Image (cartoon, rainbow over all chains, first blue to last red; front, top):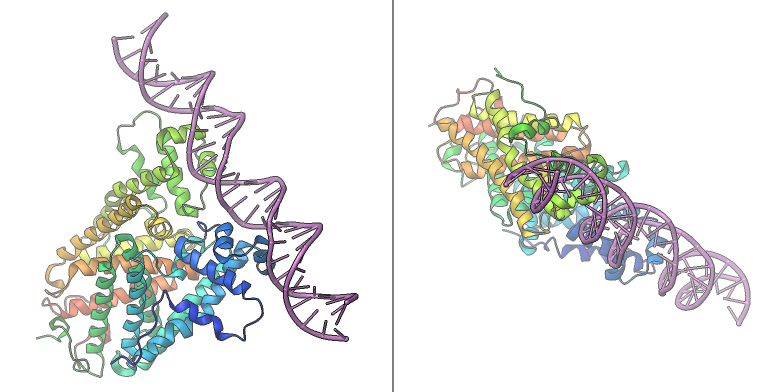
Length: 235
Length: 235
DNA sequence: GAGGCATTTGAGTGATCGATCAAATTATCT
DNA sequence: AGATAATTTGATCGATCACTCAAATGCCTC
């Protein structure tokens, strides 16, 4: 059973503020968090500096004192996401369950919660930026890639932890990329359709894939309780 | 063996122009095709009307004679994509192979070609718009969704054609959404990483899933030639 | 409390945004 | 040819864009 209900994706961001020893102003953090929220809600290009200034209650000079340009602000946002990945995204799932494979699906359920709360309007902030500004400047693309690679590496650790529940020749590196692929693609489709049906369908297919993999693993076909009839070995 | 090499995703667009009885000007088409290309290359928000005007060699008044606003132009682009889906995207794969499941992977190989040609800088134009402008206005979201639903429906037809090569209780509707999910997510990751590795990894995992499904199908484990060791029933 | 540095103020920069419109031109039809 | 409609021209609109900067204010140390 779950140990601890993880915070929703949309409320989890605030929790990362008080981590550092409160370095003076707070203005810089307010700018960063406002930019993070607006970039997520509206996208990077659609978010004007003036909107950030208004919502963060900051003057233009202050923003440009801390961040030399809008792009530098984006870099700051992406660096923050790198910092937040483990404590906000991965660790809550590790708290939620000890089962390494269930952690994968707990993570997918966490993103589902983000979709549900926003009525399928806001997707993965990194994925959004990957598509909108992914190839504008090299260091930005690399920061987005870093977020993705860390995400996949975290999932990959879980897959490694699953041991012989997966077939020994399973390409766990590829499988971890695949899981990120499924999450991002499913979120995109949920936003386009305006409901969670395609998201749930994709997660269900991924679950079916894992069931088949576990059935094929040396651990045996009986390791999991509810394996659908179609995953039985030949009758 | 393949019957006919399908045109690449990046050159296929031009072929759809001469379909109609050449209705006068050509200006409208030139505007639409230029907008289609620029939205794909740069995104919707990052593309200025002035750029479209310059590259299409058209004056502002002409554009606004045909399209009342930038958003109306986007609607025109999305409608064009709806028209192009079957002749440009789906039918070439049906020409390429008769095997319904191989058509799925031929389609994925087609998108891979688009990534390869552009050096992993341009993704799926619909997916890009889904994320960037997906929830700006309802009719736009619906047009994007229409593109996705038609895409999935086409794939779903192939899955139906596969008959008993898939387990009878397979949720083919969900599986067709899943395939779109994998394509879009894999394209996103390829753009972020700047190479095709995560794309190929995701497609390989999807292939592995299909192998497992086919093995579990009543048609039997021996229907396909090269099934990896891990897909064997219990040893 | 004086000096020095970080931060904040907020008016203002030129550039570009999407969009407008009257006039000129071209095409279509009688 | 003449009338009517469709299309094209291109200057121009106000709004907003990302951004600058000199001056004012706060904060810390000595």
